[in-house]
Length: 347
View 1 (cartoon, rainbow, N blue to C red):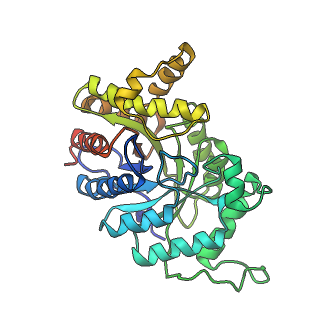
View 2 (spheres, rainbow, N blue to C red):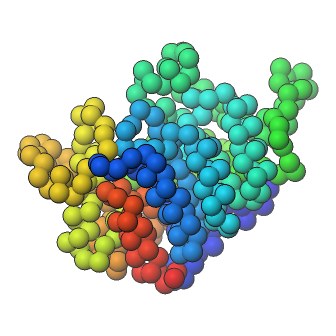
View 3 (cartoon, helix red, strand yellow):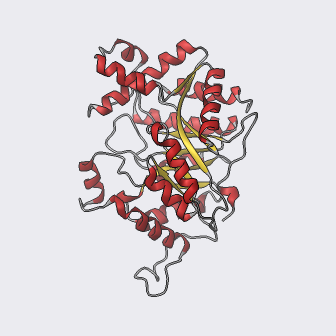
């Protein structure tokens, strides 16, 4: 497998590749069908604007997120584009039999050779009751994740040793190459595992900002060269919202903060409108939560956002920035990504 399938090439004035994490967000007053159409349009436009890759994340039981089936959505987005890399950010591997994922992503790779990424996480992406329904068992141990990754790799590469129970099983279709595996994480567990396996690593800075630099340090210090990479490669997911003015960016970023607040209260729902977010009767404790949440979102006019992203890139040493934008409505999301691309001279 070539490192070219992993390492991106910066565009315009960017010092590192810029990519997108898409959740197919369903806004208040909208429908999942509209959210998925918006996601498809974003993939097309992101390709035009010079973004390196777009990933979709596996979430379950969340009315405001329509990306519960990454493989299905990846197939659709890849068919609607021609060059941008498409992948999972990620597939929550404990929810699935590794052979099933090997077959799904083998099929995706056969349909779109050289364009598919397989990002893996070990969290359920949902509450435990839903996770048990997905897995048909309450016995899944997240600490078994390394064995699950090894099993998935064995199916993708047909590399089980002689005598292994699965040595004669083939994941079909399978070609001469396969999608690169990425490990995703929000703590040190997957960071260290990615380093030990010599795999690329994606850290969820957008919801675990305090752990970013320790996790990246652990990844780099644990890294062992492999057939996949000769040196570490780490991207970070970062929440960002750009608008024509700082004031408009703040108005657009508030619905995402309210969505996080409701999720914390156990009331996930569709992304509220800016008007709803403005009118919400926040308690003092809730206002503090929103303030802390906004401190982790790079938002403002295009130059402000570029400056914020560059400060984060330099501070963390990230090799790639993957931007996620939670706003109400596809038009505002498209405009944000376009403004960021323009700020970097990518278009």
